[in-house]
Length: 422
Image (cartoon, rainbow, N blue to C red):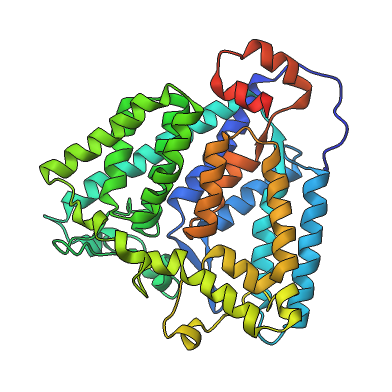
């Protein structure tokens, strides 16, 4: 079911558009509401969101709803070959499980379908509704701690067995992060792995809302949920990409100002502790802090690898799943940020091929360019999930056969215009 030469133009089928939207909604629900749940599998755990999305995408491919583009397939095969070489050359330090998981995960990016403007817009609206729902849960979660046990709340009060919460795996997630001012638990929207994930998701929702829909109630709810996460990761996204949104659309500026004024009002009234954000400004210079570990130490780790690693390791990496003892180099443990992890495991050649593969997957997308940039930044630097990028960025592409009709009939929409011009 590879994508081939396009057949003669046929009128878009409304029922197929509705069916595609439902599939997108099912994927988004799995990605956002199942990420904390796992299934025991031998000595490790399987993420339920990964399993659910895998089944949905595989079924859609088998029944012919999704296709694989030739350019995506060729780059993916090249990456799989280089990854296999890295695994075989470093079989003692690498893990077959990590190799298999990475291959399956990246294979999801190959799948795509031609979607209409209306279908993709409904997908964006569904994503915004789900983000607003999580933001509402986060808003209720934070004050609920004054009458309920916050730790029991994020553990679902025993309704969900601990084994499904992945006790052996979630130690790497700071789900119950505590706010230093007051000792309260930061909001994570109950269903997200940690507050930083809530911050990233709501920041992405704010960007999309400003670019496409501009509904004040959505912006205010997402903005409050974003602030209650008390995380700097989403703040980085907004600081970098909100100015780009205002440059891209003149109508975006008033809504950006609305979000800013709303946040300043909450800070001024003391509803949100401003010090929780301002205290993190100096983290880029503080060894061992989150900001330093995310944005500074990975470059030091990469530079150290150039000095210490053999030529083979630099070119092909140290193998999928291999770990690097950063504490022995610098005296502290660092986040294994995505880009340095890829460089360490797959080397220069594997990193280049993977970048070409992902660029090819993003090249024909209905997603606004600012949102694509935010997704890339989140994945590379913030340890954010790339799962939402599948639905928003790589799964839905314009149909070239409909380009002339779409340009004339949908010229009133900024999203359609941007997509067809791209």
